[in-house]
Amino acid sequence: MNDKIQTYLQSNFPHFLIENRQINTNLPYYTLKPEGIVPVCQALKDHPEFAFTFLNDLTSIDWLGKHAIRFEVVYLLKSPKNKHFRIQLRVPIEEGEAVPSLVSVYAGANWPEREIFDLMGIPFSGHPRMERLIMPDNFVGHPLRKDYPLEGPGQDYLIQDLLTLHVNEDISSN
Amino acid sequence: MGLTDVLSKPGEMFGDMFQVAKLENVVQWGQSFSLWPYPFATACCGIEYMSTSCSDYDIARFGAERPSFSPRQADMILVLGTITYKMAPVLRQIYDQLAEPKFVISVGACASSGGMFHTYGVLQGVDRILPVDVYVPGCPPRPEALLDALMKLQIKVQSQGLEARRQEIMKKIQEINERNKPLIVA
Image (cartoon, rainbow over the protein chains, first blue to last red):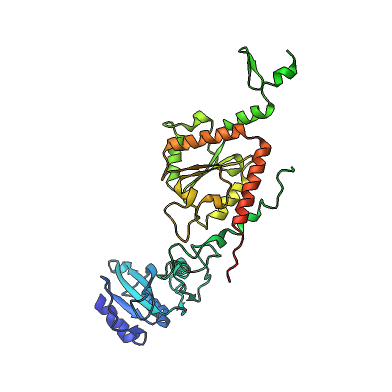
């Protein structure tokens, strides 16, 4: 199965593949350029034999100080037709660059992409609603980055709007 | 013995038939035994509250057996657990919806000080946003500690007048506001 996929990708999408990237994992993985993730996923999903119709997970890694390219977005695809065979697609990305959104192929990529944007600060171009998912809307920073301090820079600014409700009200007079 | 003499000795028993008191004290006494709790349970302290409210520990002995799941039908909010910055506006709005006079019990280390979660997402104590009356230590506190907190609050309700209560709330909210003034970062 893995050999077939490798042959298929190397014959059809050789310009999107990045070779010679060694990563310790027990799953077959293919490293792609950012612009190739949408066509490759679409092709693997629509292929009659492979049929990777399910996006198992979508997450990201911060390789600060370990790899030349800092971030990596990891797509975990599953093919229920072929005994739930799984592959990884990995997209290395520098800070500030955007990855094309996968929502047009897998609708379930919507919230994971927002979560990655919120916690890791990787923007996804073409996403229908690129906003924070988990942290408050006025939060500053991306807390899952390796260089983010655990205590944060001091979060008092997050509650400053709440306290105007009773302050101007003179409750002793009524 | 005239009426003036009787009223000058509140709390004194006259035989075993009647006792005189100020109306305010009678109201406060009744209030202290009919506190309706609103359990704002976000973590494991909520499990301890469930045990406290059930028959083993039986918070009904102190008149607080009626947990209300609408803040408009409650006057004592129990903050049971970790409060994140995203939850803080929700908690604040629920506090504003409680019926007056309202009391706040901060249960457990997380609600009182952030506990072990000294991190970017956790509010470091609900006294940053609410005027807290009683703090309960523990992680999580035993049901006995919760009952003790309720008894402490009853003593406070019985001894504090309505006007003093209002003044205390206003003072605490002004302090909170002063402490949380917007920081200007250059």
